[in-house]
Image (cartoon, rainbow, N blue to C red; front, side):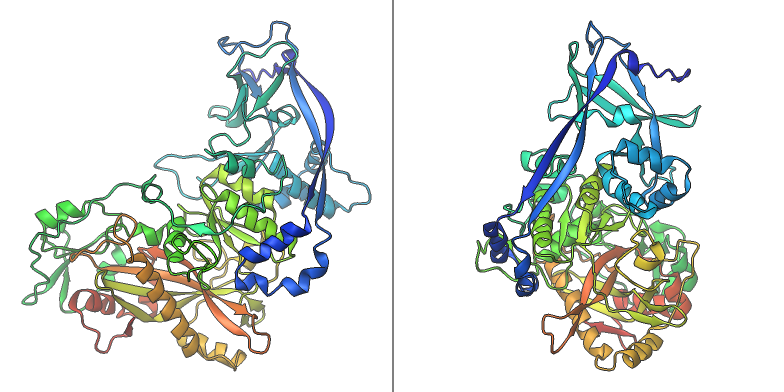
Length: 618
């Protein structure tokens, strides 16, 4: 490493072969789509009936082999057999196009490495070809650690040099490749080392999807970038996940001891509030509350960390209230939110009604790209056959603020993303209701309502009727998906323009532009969705449902977007779509717009006072 010794050529050599692969979808397979699909997809059948006999994809893949040329072979016990592989290109996805366009020689090197035909192609077409083909070559790594900022921990992708990129896949590999960062040199390499004995002229192989799948069907799906196959026979619908899955990888938490005597909220004096969130300390002015700086003195604990020890709290401090519910992660973690919301779906009577359901119309079709990747591939391929829109937004379920979030219609891109961390794939809202911005045009927007949960059982839920808006900064179109300001609305944490607007001003302009639609009707649908989400969350006992706790109160921020529903061409409908449920939302802007904001929130949650408050019981 110190001397940058690249001596792999003394042990290995590369040879080239070629093969063709062909995917064919029969008429029978195309017809089978109709029996499994929801009403939303079936409405497109008549429009696409003339395409069902054109369902053949032919791909030509260069295949290289790396073989051992050392007469003695390679022994995994020999410490000399650790080799360095250089990286030809390191980048983040958002700047990949820019790199190819601007870095001298990079595009030409990638074209040659990927053996892309450049005849009669413009430079932009060549870049597009590399961006499509690179997912068979990409690897990723990220920097971790407790002191790493979220942005710094976002994954970097890299393409190994020609030697490393030509080592082929095997489910039973004899080598491993592992990224390694040399801190003194501030350079990344890949380490290549054997895990099995390899004889002279034996092929060197590695597992392209190491650690990403535990079952054969998932491995088959994840190998598609290198070994295309038809998986449309897999049932793409969803089943209720097991309790073990909902608990796996999560920090365990306890349930309160409900045999305890809970004294309730004192009414004869001010309630003492311990708040870690400085915005509460600066903006809570209601005379029924006072801020304290010692949590031992507090009646109300408003934490900014995820509390887990509810049993201890119920025994040692039954008089204290807390701003969280046990097992609320089933709402606030993206993959679990999708699972929870599916419970609100209507039962599909054509299949086993005990386990299999269709999707709620207000929930974008969502798959976990670790546990449901075969189902996702099947759904994607069936949509592709029928020429339906196939754009997806892929999000880490463990990050926020749109970090490491990508929009694409490229199946290979989607299937490679889980190698950089856990992801969900949500059907991208490709036909959103847009908003006219002066001097810009028609842009995407989303909006946030706050819900206040007083009780899980029985469900007692309020919604704060003022809502908050976020806007894209560029006109919307289904292209240039690496253009953040076109496809995303979270501008608070970027060096870009942040448009702000009061909700009453928005409603006035919205109804002026869409005179056939009244916000009160849209809001009625929104409130119905919010209630359905919480009913689904409380429909099952913990740990797969929200736990009842007399000491708990909570505020959640729910992000939504509007989509055009043209299922009835004579009467278009605006369908609100659920995006996320957020815990501990940023309320700085709320207090700037409405100085009495936290007075309202605390009055409802802890005093049960809704008079003259902008809230509604759901």
